[in-house]
Structure formats: structure tokens, C-alpha cells
Length: 260
Image (spheres, helix red, strand yellow):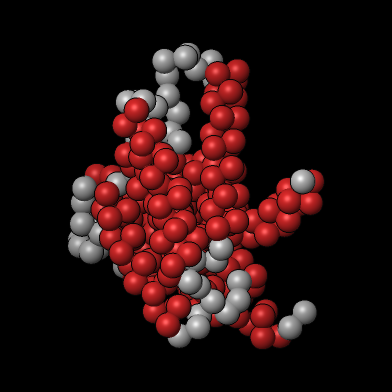
């Protein structure tokens, strides 16, 4: 085990905690069409602005025992759990992805996948305020990475973008209600970022996302008694497929090709 890799993973985890704190704001405010910049975080009960000492990721929540310092209102455990999840995703990117520039892109990608999955699961919407800026931002980052030999390729990224999003866009047009345009924008991000590492990443992400969505629908019908006319959000499954593919795509692709 390399000390450099361990140090990098820990550094990424620390950055993930900080970014995860920001992500909780995005997840809460974006579906409500509120600003993610101002006002500062406030207690949902008494409206008191959260002081800096009470806004330290995870630590503040534990010290306050999950309650507001002023009124005692319970603060959801979703906040520290989201921060810890983001830290874990960042740490995984720092540990497994080479080179460093590529690891940074993957960490940001995983954070977007987490935010989209949580918002879609709760509100059944994939906000344009996330997808529209994410596409050009990732495209620009990949272009720069390609120019500086950062382990990503812009041409492959653009092919992945088209290969994943265009078929689902046509499906959304052909079968209204079957596939939302928000899902199409989400897979455009997935295809773009994962395509930068190779098209097998995109293929595995698509397979995992679509199969996961199908299994989820069957479980919802069997366990939650969903009817045929009820829908489940597809975004979390697509996001999970994209996130998993980052780490398992080479192994799955090689295993599949070995069967041919």
C-alpha cells in the first residue's frame, strides 16, 4: 500500500466532507428553486442562522446530537450521512483513479450523481440547474485534461455523450412518459464523463443503470405494491450505474468479452 495513495485518498476524503456540506444545500434548495448562495443555512424550526462553529461537516451534528443549538429542533441525519457519502466517494476516486487530474473529474462526477439521485428519489425531478451547467463544465474539464495529458480524451467523451444520450432521447420522443428528458440529460453527463475514459465504461454504465431500473421496478411492484400505472424515478438507477461503472467497468467488460 503506497503512502502516496493513502495520503491522496485521505486528502480527497477531507475535500469530500467540505463539498458534501455544500451538496446538502444543493439537494435541499435546488428542487425548491432557491438560491444555493444565500441566505446562509438556517434552522428549519426557529430560523436562526447556523453559526460557523455549528456548520462543521459531521462533527457539529454529532456534538449537537442532531439538534439546533437554539431551539432544540431535530436536524435530519441526512445531512451528515450525505457529507460522509460524499467523502467516501471522493476517497474512492482518489484511491482508484489515476492520474490525479482524472481523479478530480471523477470525484466531481460522483458528487453530481449523488445529488441527482437524491433529488430524483425524493422529488421525481432531475433539475436543469444541475444538468445544464454540468455538461459544459465537464466538457471543458475533459478538454483541458486531454490537452495536458490528464488521463481523459475529449473525442472519446463526445462519442460516449452521443452514444448514450441520443438513443434514449429518441426513445423519450417515441414513447412519451416512458423516459423523461431529465433522464436523457443525466445520461448525457454520464456518457460524456465516462466516455472520456473509454467506451466500455459507457456500455457498462448503461447496462447497470437499465438493468437496475428494471429490477427496481419489479421490486417496487412486488414489495411496495406499485401498480402498472405507477412510476418510479429512473434517475437514481442511472446515476448508480454511472457511479459503479467508474470502478467496475474494466472488470465487467473483460469478463463479458471473455465469454465470447
